[in-house]
Image (cartoon, rainbow over all chains, first blue to last red; front, side, top):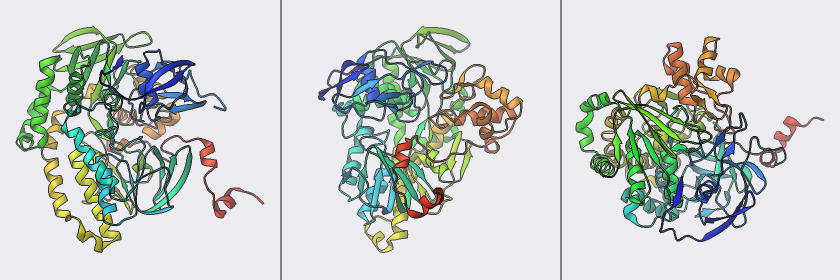
Length: 98
Length: 473
């Protein structure tokens, strides 16, 4: 769906998506890094399990919900990446205790 | 100065939102000697229109345009003003005592201010068409955010659909950066051109007139534009695969990987409404707008609203509204300091200039009914996955307004708290019941206006009376 434009000179930041290494860039939000990764990063909704991707990218729609460093239901479009960040694509409701 | 957490418990002025209005307001207030705290949810200042202006990887000025880069001047100004700037801060509560609940850096706290200026801006109007929840369908603003903050451009087969000034700007920006757009579907109603005509003279003198025309010409020279589109539907198995549309009575389907939707922006009302600020239905802009005095003051003593949250006016108007609200705060708290800043009349004149011709845009780009009020199994509430028919069925058995509807269907009770269904629900119920939207009303919004964790709430500092209120013995 998206690719990075050619002149992006920002530093590479390694993050992990469901255990797989992904090269993000410094200043990316989690959602932007997931889009650029080219991986299938569709979450599943809590209500029906329907597949979703971020819709608004500005903190409004909550379709970017994702588990970040063990904490569920984070808004991926508002959280910046950091080296070694562990991201899990959320399938359904946030699990109890995380 | 940029800080990690508020340095005090009390301020003269708290400004919420660091877009055009918030930056202008905080800067003027701090320069006039008010202890000012600027709170913003994003990682850097700029709001949506100047998103990532201090950090964007897109450095070539031509690509995002001069209006975008104008934001950096205001950012420099506020950074030098002495205001405390807290980024990455979510304001989840504001009450009529001007107590503000802030979540930042994993913890929450309350601060209090003598005055509050809400500059929480706008959000994109819901665009509830069949299939709008499919992966691959998103707002044009979302694509613009990805473009500004991370230099991401559409790659697969891309369709852009909708209308409005931002719609053409985004399309032009994507194309300039080498992004792919296969088709533009323009949903502007043909009869709106006639309706807008009486207001055209004022718009000719608006700063937006020439820029807007140039942008539309730029897009049309590069991409196929279909005008007069009256129906759009997205479909696919687990993701977007096809966009179907109707124009001039002809139905067409095209394969697509990405569909970008946009039909204008509306005030982001959640924080203001939760604080008890009175709103009214705006029949021209088709949204809820706060009831304000000439300085942006609301029905709640001490709270003012500036920027697009006060009614859509665009970035230039937002800056002036921010200055007006800030100057009013200075006059109220430090009357003698007001002499150092330009007069209210200066700002009012600049605002009038920035707002010139706005009515032309409002009338021309008034979104059509079929794109605001869906039917059948089109989803209205994305969070709780409630369809238009579900809502009509609830009305048929007695649901009278958005708040009763919550009990029937949980609409607006998911994490987005009605931000993406509220307007649709109001208008859908108004039409089904044959009543004006004003009478149908809106969701009763309450804090926390953004979800926070229980542990954050539990770790809030407690005073003795708060503990006594809940602890027995």
